[in-house]
Length: 430
Ligand SMILES: *Cc1c(COP(=O)(O)O)cnc(C)c1O
Image (cartoon, rainbow, N blue to C red; front, side):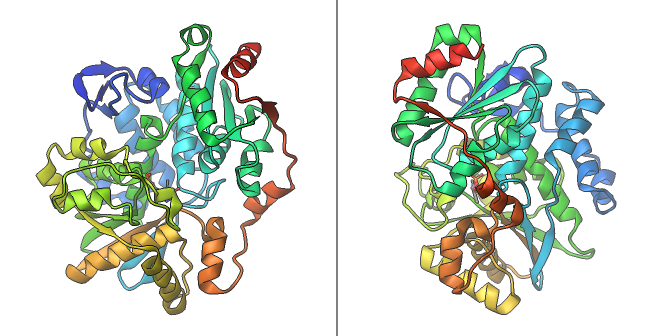
C-alpha cells in the first residue's frame, strides 16, 4: 500500500517513508491510497471475535501487503495489550473506556502501535524519536515506546514546568527512554527538536523521527476500537451514533476510517469545548483556525485541528462530511454540570473530556430518536483529579499503576537551552 499526501494525491510514498517522515514534505497528511472494504460476513461476525482477532483482520486489510501475518499479529498484540470495555451508562447510552493503558488515556493505543511498527519497518538501523513535551505527549510516547527494540526515545521537557506526576511518567523508565531536562520553556524544547530535524548533517548520520500525532502509525490503529465497541453493543440495536471528544480530530477521523471500511455507523458527533472551529465549520462557517482557549478539558484546547484535512479527504467533499458528522460544543460550566448529574443519576464518573462527548451524544439523541449511542471516554477521571474532585467534593483515587510512577526514581540529563549542546549529545549516542 502506498500513502499519498492530502496536499497532492500524486505524491505517494511507501509505508516506511510515511511512518518515518510523519508529515509529508508539502505539509500534507498521509492517507492510504485505497480504503479496503471488509467482507460483510466479517462485520456480521464481529460479536464472536476477540479485540485481537478484530485487530488482525482490520490491520491486515490495510497493512497486509507490507507486513507478514506474523508481524501483523505481533503489532496488534502489542497494541491491544489492555481492554477497552463498553459500559452501559443509561438506556441506549454506552461509553467506551479507552483509558486502561499505561498512561490512562486513549493515546496509548496509537503510541504503542507506532513504536512497534517503527521497529518492524527499520531492520538494521536504530531509529531515534525526538519529542518535545509540556507533559502528556512525553508520557504517552515514553510508555508506548518503552523497551521496544531498535527504537530510542529522547524527550525534551522544560525543567520545573511539568507536573510531578507527568514528569515521573517519562523520567523514571530508563532503558531506551532518555529524558533531557532543558533549562528553558516548552517553546525552547520545541525549537531544539525542530532544528534537529532540519539539520542535514545530523540527519545524514542518524535516522531521526518525530512520532507526532498526525503520523499514520498513530492515527490508523485508533479505528480498531470502533469495531470493537460496535461488536459489544447488545444485539437488536438499530442505528448507531458515536460521539467523540475532539481536539486535533485524529480520533474521530479514525472512526470515519472504520465507517469507510464497512462498519455500519450511521452518524458521528464531533464534540468540543469552546474551541469550536469544527462545529462552526459544520454549521456553515468557513474553516478558520484561531488561537486556542483554555478549558477544563485541556487536551482538546486546539485552535487549529491538524486532522481536519483528513476528514475532508475521507468523505471526498464537504456536503457528504456534513451529512455524516454533527458538531456540538459546550462550555466548562455545562461540562461540570454533566459530570455531576451523571454521577448522581447513574453512578458513573466521567472525566471532563468524556463529559463533553456525553453532552454531544445526548444533544444529538434528543433530536433524533431511535439511536443507540456510544461516547468515548478518552482519559481516566483520576488524570484530571483537580477538576473531578472540585465537582464531586470527594477524592478520586489514582489507579495503582499510575500511583506507582510516583515511587520511581527520576533520572534526567540536564541540558542547556542551546542547540549545539543538544546536537553534541545526539552525536555522542551513535
Ligand atoms: C488528545 C485527547 C483528546 C483529543 O483527541 P484528538 O484525536 O486530538 O481529537 C481528547 N481527550 C483526551 C483525554 C486527549 O488526551
